[in-house]
Image (cartoon, rainbow, N blue to C red; front, side):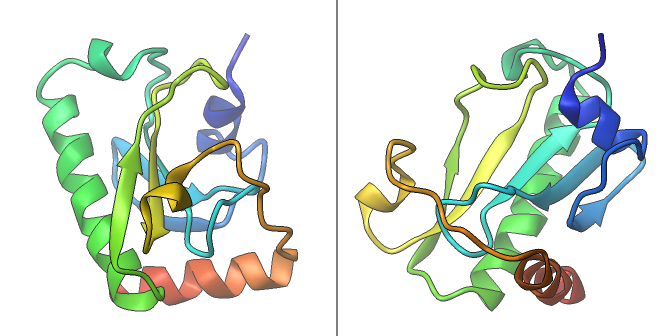
Length: 130
């Protein structure tokens, strides 16, 4: 069965897209830790990030770097943190999270409750920098 992220790639489930290439996709997390919290995925459904083969792995990291720089340029933060947990969805993904303190990247913290309009505006703002 296709993962939720594969369904997003295939257009079956909508997302707030930030950036896209032939092989990678970046979209806002719908349960963000911070405004601008973005997920970066390879389009092929690969469960574990460290099973992604070269050259796609390098392409994914370069893509994540471009997205992170756009997040950094548009969101209020000290840095953009990167986390790979990989337990909640069986599709490799990288969390890019605007942070100002180490606890800002703690996944046990309450998530923000943003409207679809707020998410769309954030995605547009980040996408315009890329």
